[in-house]
Image 1 (cartoon, rainbow, N blue to C red):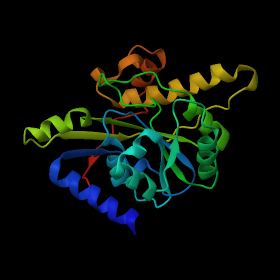
Image 2 (cartoon, one colour):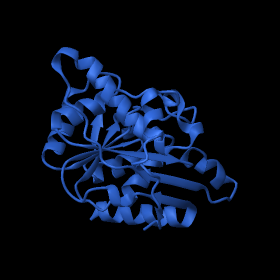
Image 3 (tube, rainbow, N blue to C red):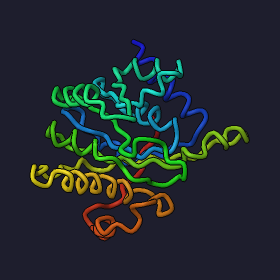
Length: 231
């Protein structure tokens, strides 16, 4: 009940306070284990994604520093969120996340591990590639922009413009034991380049000149999708 109530509240707030463009929401599968990978510009990124998802098995991997905030703690706990200590190798959290995926659940992750202070993509960690490989599940890249300035615009009594695009699920190649670190890095870069492709150029950050991104931008089979109304 709390899950549905919070989702309804989030939808209402975004409708009233912002102008949200949603692209490619139909790409989110309605069942089966999958990792959602989203860039992180603001604290409102997770609630935005959460408000759009219809799956009851959706949860998130969240930094345990947010436990100090009563609102965020309630919101994360209501969706069965998995708390992770990003300052060390938190194997308990990774095992819990892996179990959720293997049971067919949906797990949201910010591969960068923290909010970007510059407003563009920063170097991602390889944990997302590790989980996708171990759970044998696809990754669905998500690009969000406009949230980084949302609070400033609201303080000026302006409705911020926010865009969110859901890409197509991608299946990563298996990680080879002999080249484990290199494979994990390559798969992580693949995820981030798919996110970068959907972002406006100014947001692409450290991946702006990545060779894989240039390939994706030139691929005619990856068109920009039409937007749909916010629920």
